[in-house]
Image (tube, rainbow, N blue to C red; front, side, top):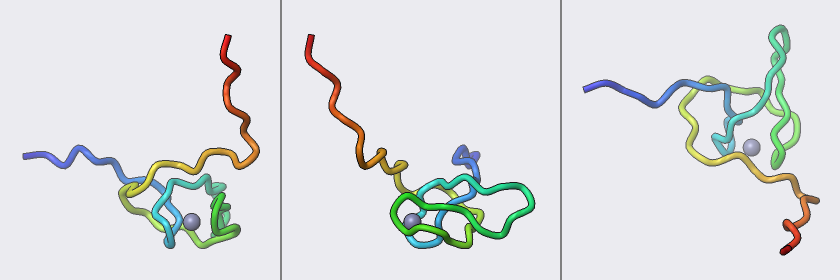
Length: 58
Ligand SMILES: [Zn+2]
């Protein structure tokens, strides 16, 4: 049995993947703002951009 869930840099609060710069100890979570990221499996899908508009129906 193999663990196929990759480890990502995630927000410690919501476990959503965040983008952390290589030499920074902080990352930005869409929901929690600036956080100290942790390495873990992703437990939640990324938050959609808040101002994203629905796709127009052709
Ligand atoms: Zn978060």
